[in-house]
Length: 220
Ligand SMILES: CCCCCCCCCCCC(=O)SCCNC(=O)CCNC(=O)[C@H](O)C(C)(C)COP(=O)(O)OP(=O)(O)OC[C@H]1O[C@@H](n2cnc3c(N)ncnc32)[C@H](O)[C@@H]1OP(=O)(O)O
Image (cartoon, rainbow, N blue to C red):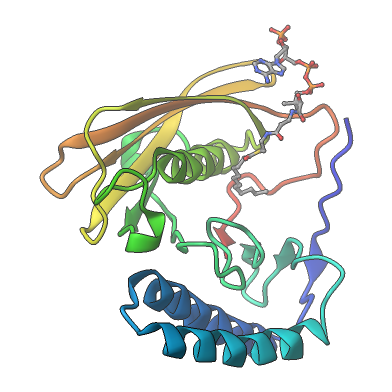
């Protein structure tokens, strides 16, 4: 299969991307505030009206699609529109992933503090949100090992409920490889090291894959 991955140079001025990131952070604050608001009915309706005006202002100057991959001014491969790491995507936590070679080939780690907007069972993080984070982190580990690809399968074991509002750590590293297939294992653990979620992903490198640097530095 072919994969349309645009590695454009400086798709947007850095200063504009910073302004977009600031808008995105503010939007996340808004989402958190909406999830927790105790404002009375009349005020809710008034705020919704104010937000509708802002929404239309943004929509009036829409792009055709979200920001694609691009090479940043520091040589980092960036995906501003990504749902997990994107600095221009309000849905993203965002996850900031760091290489951690001590955990194995493609080893990566990320601090993660979930928020009330991630609620599944009352007071706990939705299992699908944990899966989203694991999918991305495992995929990043595969890419860091020079074996980037798409998720074929993702298997999770929810060991304990995942709290929000507490600093947690997510880690992943390549477990084994076979041809175009890469198995990656990861986990989400609390600060005491107690494992909350275990994940195994199979990533498949398509036959047509854009030339990658061996160990791309990737950011949102
Ligand atoms: C850039 C920086 C990034 C930076 C880091 C970015 C991290 C991003 C992480 C997020 C990743 C995602 O969410 S990706 C989005 C979710 N995934 C997808 O949308 C993938 C949709 N599926 C596909 O596009 C396709 O099925 C592929 C690409 C996965 C495989 O297609 P293919 O390449 O044609 O594979 P094919 O020749 O049929 O099979 C090759 C081998 O793999 C096996 N195989 C194929 N598909 C599967 C499968 N789903 N589950 C198990 N095994 C499978 C076959 O049995 C075969 O094994 P054998 O006979 O050789 O033994």
